[in-house]
Length: 388
Image 1 (cartoon, one colour):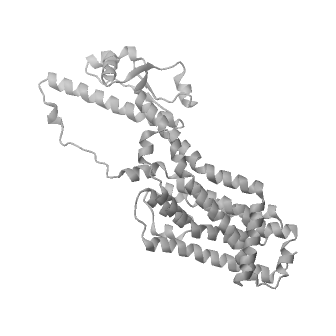
Image 2 (cartoon, rainbow, N blue to C red):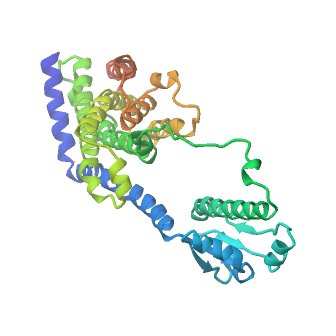
Image 3 (spheres, one colour):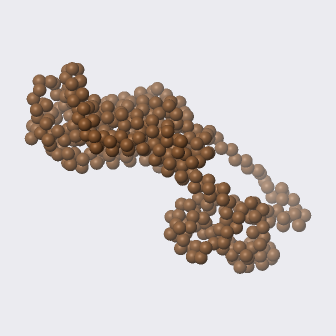
C-alpha cells in the first residue's frame, strides 16, 4: 500500500506542478501576500503618524476666539481655517480632519463668565475625522481646565481644592502585544493563502479527473482504494504546505517595505515566528486538503466542485473573524475548531506568548481527526460509488 500511495503521490504532484499558469498565479500570490499586507499596514500607521506630526486644528470662526487661538498656538498647534463647504466634505470623506466651529459671541460669553458652546464636527463614516477628534477634544479639555484655574486664582481659591484625587494611567501591554494589534491580519492572510493554494489541486485531482475521464483508468489498477486516496491527498497537502511556507517567509523581506519607524521597531516577525507559523499550519493544510477532496469527489465536473467548495471557503474565512469580534478574549473552545485554533495560536506567537504543548497538540489532533474522516469518506466513495 505504501509503494502504491507513493507512486500516486508522485504522479499527482507532477500533474499539479505541470499546470504552470495556475501554479504561477498561486505562487506569486503567496509570495506577494507578505509585502502587500505589510505595505497596507504601514500606510495606515504612517498616515496616522503624519496627521499627528502635522499638529493642525481646522477651525471655522477662529477670528471670534483669540483666547482659544493663543492657547492652541502655545500648545505648538497650527490653526487652519476650515474650507468652504466643510460639512459636505466631511460627509464625502474628502476632508480628513474634524472641524471645530466657534460661535461669534465666544469672547463675550467668556468675559461674562458664561460657558460658550463650540461644536466639533466629524462624520461616523469618515474614519480619518473620527481618529482626529480625540486630540482636538483633549486640547479643548486643556483649555477649559486652564481657564477654570485662572478664574479660581483670581478669586484667591487654590485649584488643588477641587481635585479630590489624581489619576495616573499605566499601560500594562508590552511592546509585542501592542505590535500584535497592528498585525492581526497576518494570520488571516496566511490562512487564506493555504486554503486557496490547496483548492485548485484538490478539485483537479478529484472532480477534474472525473470530468476528463482519467479517474476510471486509475481505479482499474489493483492498488487499494485507500492507497490511491492517500497518494492524491499527499500531493494536495504538499501544495498547501508549500504555499504555507512561501506565504510565511514572504513577511521576512516584506518588513523592509515598512514606512513607519515605530512600526518597524514594534513588528517582530523573524525566522522563529515563521517556523512556528508553518508548524501550526501543517496539520491544517492536511485537513483542508482532505475536506476539499471530500467535497469534490461527489461532483461530476470541475465547475460543480468549485460551487460546492464555496461553502468550505466561506466557513474557513469567517472563522478567524471570531477572534476580532470577541472582546472577551480567546475562549477554550476556540482550540477545538480548525482554522480558528490556528489563528488563535498564531496571534499568541505575534504577542510573544508561550505556546503550551497541550494547546498545540489539541489543535493538531482535531485537524488529524478531520483529515482521517475526510480521507475515509473519499476512499469509501471511490470503492462503492459508480463513477459515471
